[in-house]
Length: 335
Picture 1 (cartoon, one colour):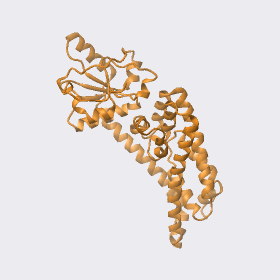
Picture 2 (picture 1 turned 30 degrees about the vertical axis):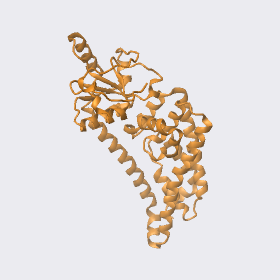
Picture 3 (picture 1 turned 90 degrees about the horizontal axis):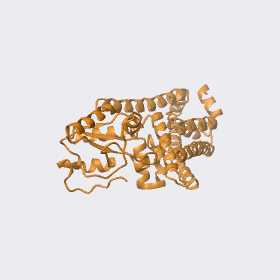
Picture 4 (picture 1 turned 180 degrees about the vertical axis):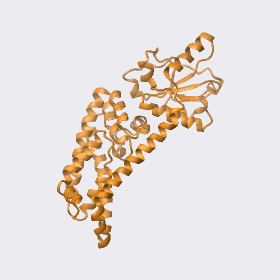
């Protein structure tokens, strides 16, 4: 038996626990390959399926509980840290907050299947004020569904492999190499996906100093200022509810669905609180595809503007002055 298999079988439960714990704590090392490996080996009865499941559940419960309490205590700052660690930052906080708004704790049942959502779901649950007992119940249920899906998939593959002696012998000798290739493949896919996204938005970004100059010039000349949209989720308003000068609070989904409210006669600036402006950049790219080209994400978003020392104001719901934006349309604004 290859030494890699011997080592894994001997320390299987410790490896499963530590590996899943590290991933759930936010380090971007995929657990799917190791779950599939454990499932495959359980088909040969070299490791136990129940013990493997308990090791995974313990790791998930510990890591998710830590993030739950950090989210409850520190809120948005924890989420921004996790998104910087995530290889799926472009779908990180905004999508998870949207799921929680629509489905509540049921989100925890499937969050681990969605890249980028798994780690941030726990701190967002804490930020929303969900009770810990309720969180733990839903989180454990979601962890069971997630772990069992991949353990069973590996078990199914192992059962098929056993039916062919030659194939099983070959698989045993190259199991370590296959595992490494699976891990590298998952990581490479996520890195390439994230880099492609960031490359698309770099040319669109607007610096806070540029926006400040545009606002000052509009004031001095008596011109209409840029149309500024605050894309933050209501949870993001808790640390600081203020907005940029003249900004309107409009959710990403509402802005995409009712894009007719966007004026075509001036620049449109979008901002959020995600690292690398993921939400605003993603919305800007989608609006470009709809033929709205004067849309740009603000570099650094709300935090970048605030750190630069530029003015922030209490939010006052206003009506856009652009003719395109004054057409009668009902849009639910975030408050």
